[in-house]
Each structure stands twice: as C-alpha cells, then as structure tokens.
Image (cartoon, rainbow, N blue to C red; front, top):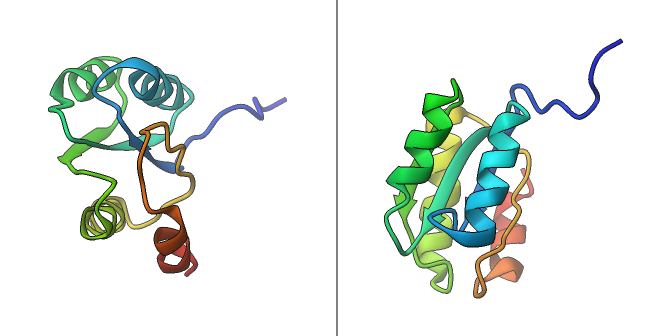
Length: 106
C-alpha cells in the first residue's frame, strides 16, 4: 500500500520560510517529498540547508510577497527551476493572492 501523504514530485512555494510557521511548513512538505521554493524578505538559506541535509530539494528567493512583481518572480522561479507548481501554502502575512491566482491558472 502506498503512503497517500507523500508528495514526491510535487512542487510547493512557501512564503515566509526563513522562520516560524513558514519554516515549519517548508520542512514538513520537504519531509513528505515535495520540492520547496521559499520566498521570504529574509534570507532562508538555513531552511534550504536543513531541507537539503535531509536529502530534500529546496531553493529560496528574496521576495516581498506584498509586491505583485515579487509574487510573479517567485512563481516564475518555481516554474523555471522545477517545471511545475502544485501547491502554495502562503503563511506570510501580506500577499497579492488575487493577482497571483489569475497568473497561476495554467
């Protein structure tokens, strides 16, 4: 029987992944097998390193998700690096989900 909680091959953007709830979400998704793209106004290299040390895949980008152009950069980065986007838990406080949701429907 396969584990239906596995996310192998899935790609997730996690905002605010440098610390706190965003970091915990990024680590949990990576442990479940997802490839992680972190967008944060802070350096998230510690989270990326922790994911990679557990044989996970992760990238990060300095991004202010309250700015629509940074949202675009984050989505395009995920699509360019991993070729897909499957989920976007968005724990960062401010973002432009209305604009982003239109762009992600592909």
